[in-house]
Image 1 (tube, rainbow, N blue to C red):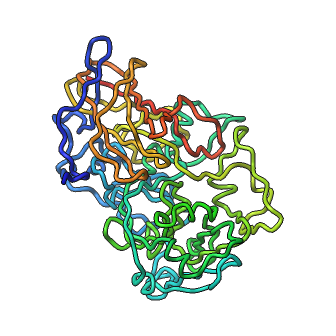
Image 2 (image 1 turned 135 degrees about the vertical axis):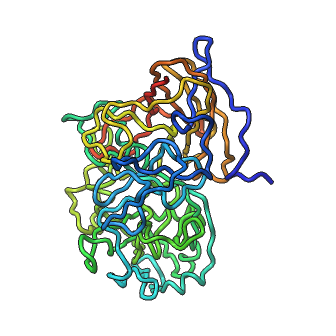
Image 3 (image 1 turned 90 degrees about the vertical axis):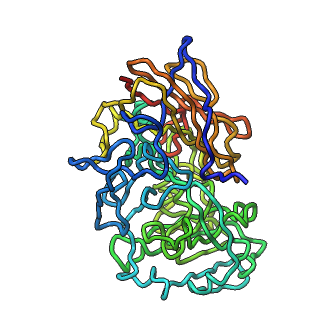
Length: 462
């Protein structure tokens, strides 16, 4: 059987424009050939910036007081957020050292807060819509039936930079604010988890069940304090996908790292990453809806195109109030695509200090035959095809490198180019299995969430 992770690559299609082949590859910019997954990872340069393309030198470590793992291969967005260097992605499964970190507060540590120590961790499952309230330990969880699934995890703000760069949303009344994730707030992992089908069988679901709240309560501004982090979802989502949604305890075959939610996090494939609550300590299933930071003032599309829902009289509010409901909570990921090429950032308010390009600078690729790679995902239906075009020319279908074992995974794609010297704009467009394609633009929302428009990559060839 073919190995979908290390599938052989041969004969990528070519992209033509004005009777010439014009295409771009993943590449060690300035180096011959296509970078491979087993090459050494990128390292920061002497000025602290990440490099473009893999190198033969080992990576330089970068330790940060807000995180546990080495973040030397990640873009430094702010004190609690680190983005993936997507231009150096080459593997199907994202290695843990390249996987982005999205925290509201510093990572909770077991040596400081026993609530995230597997020896003391407890998960309370309760609410007026369960028959049997219960509490389980980490050892209890490990004894339960588990499954594994390969799924994209993505920050709701991934692609926010393109609201600024492509849609000029920098000034009121259409001012987007937030971290400049670029396209690095995403990764693909294999998750091992106890499915909610088993958990619901354990506690018993009453007919009045309406919503489920996954709650952390751990990741506060200071250790050993109550946090305001968690995310609800309709119980219908769990009933429709009881074997896909669950409680994850391993990532890429290893116990969860602290930065990724150890010892246990929720797993809601296909939804924005904030729904997969890290450092999980409570599940509440109730006959009412829940309103928290991550579905009101955070992770909600707020703007004229997104009328705010009305809360119910019996809804539960944690750390927020009814007036904080101003838009539509983010939920399912929209279809996306990207090239493994850094974005030319001209308008973004704040540049990551270790971004490999200066403001307004475009990546440089050799004007010679090469192959361009990218990634596409569409978790609601799965990816049917990806098209690429250069300088507004005809769309050409790219070749997939990977199969798609389930709709939640991404697919690497490739297409070939023999570029002429000069500058080009290259666009990628995903079509999902429903026939829906990425749009040219997306509506304004204050937080810059769900950027699913066609991305544009400005590249110099020389």
